Length: 346
Ligand code: ZN
Ligand code: ZN
Image (cartoon, rainbow, N blue to C red; front, side):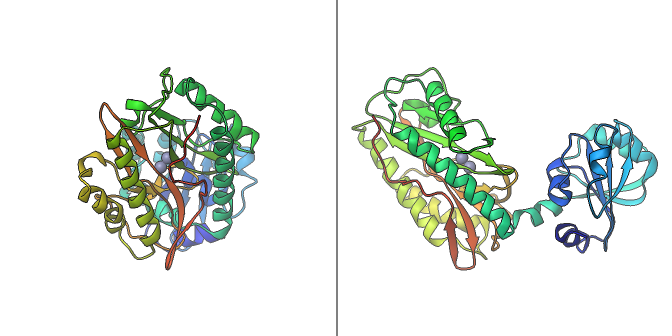
């Protein structure tokens, strides 16, 4: 039985029906758009899928394979009985209805596989490191080109080409290019806005390599900045560096967040940093754990997280600086390496 399945089964006191397709992939290496995995306490697992994928499923080792109808939860409702745990955060209500129409007694669980998946094996970290490096190189090539006079959309598209040329399989999410006042929107979509002189441009991008995601943000300038914006950048950079120097295993997500949040608040920008410090990254670009004022997580060695404070000034602009980091016993190892000090682009 695989190490991952084993780690999960030892945590169970009743069978767990895994329906999150990324979790199914993580546990078995099986990729499909319709599958579920029933993992037994103490070992043994059954992989369910429909006709389209069943031949591929038979290649998976360590699992029994059962063919189901395409409406899988209705079918499983008729097969399963006794206590069956399910992933309450991802099973849609209608699927829960279908499943619960059968004989099984359904028990909700939260984040069982996600907790295991959050702690990366060194092999996974190597893939994340590779993704981060490709992302760095693509962006480095972009900064050698012109920003001023190009639209945000055009820059985002050009970065995509450069990332592809440097070896990315795909983007891990839609690139954000936010210039001038658009920088005040943490999740701005690249617009037709033409990048101006004398402002900040925030670029948040990531690639997928060998199934693993990268996530990085840099904020660059297009020349002399308004004082408030320059100060916001300096405060954000100091806070980000402070978090990179202090975050380590054993710390709660709340405490990690506070390392960057406190100096930003002390500088008077507290209300302008409205999101958490970071999130886990792996097979998905947003996964466990969370670093925020609302987090319930504690950092463990092998967690891979972003460290991304931002300051957003409505009508003026904004900045965010984001690194991808492996949590170690005594600190973090950064996977992103492009300089984060303010650079000026043309
Ligand atoms: Zn990002
Ligand atoms: Zn992020």
